[in-house]
Image 1 (spheres, helix red, strand yellow):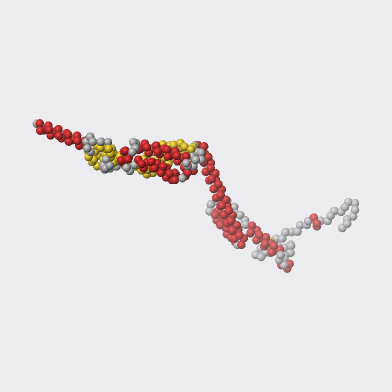
Image 2: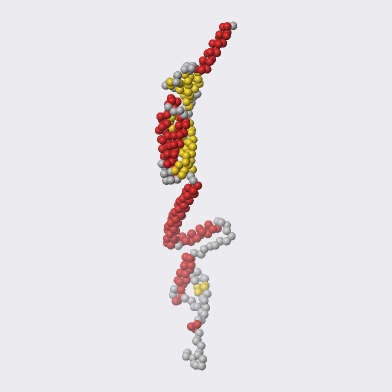
Length: 300
């Protein structure tokens, strides 16, 4: 019986020793061992780590990338505009021993450095840079944060400016400026279109002047386009060139030789065989005798 109790006691001691000397380190962690308060340079990797009871103390350090939002900071830009800027910092631990020994709380230290650097970058930049040149500002902000972080065993992977909050008055001014810029571009585009259209129209007019039949073809094309709409009323423009043609035909008719002319009482014959009645002669004022003066004789 005494032997049984002795075995149980020894088993309990072994279990207590294992409980105090064995630690489990996950894949994304690294272990820093302090023996009697002094750090051991050998870093414990993931898996089981054996410790000396009472003498060793294990501190686990997370090696994952940490995402830390930087609170929005109020500042005045170089061109005297009040803005509110917030950012986000991505960093990770590269030296677990330095993180455990050189800095008390590396996450808080990185946060304070990020806020200070963000305020500094706001004061050194213009408003246009904050709105449009984000990549260069992100690189400068990352360099400012990474300089002290390297001495703590931390590496800054990336820094991004998330949002730039502007006053309402500045937003209205920028919207008016953008609207004026868009209106200017629209007017320039319209003027360019008018210039090109006038150039093309002048070329078309020259071509129609050289070839009068082109105007007739254009007229027929316009009639086809209007007729495709299935309108009940069709307004057909009468070309001036056709009137000029008729006028030239009339003038040529008037310039014929005397032997081909017809008497005024009879109808006039055209080239196509049609007869056009002559306008009868209406006496004018010159054909009427003037009245005789009263009390005298006529001088005629």
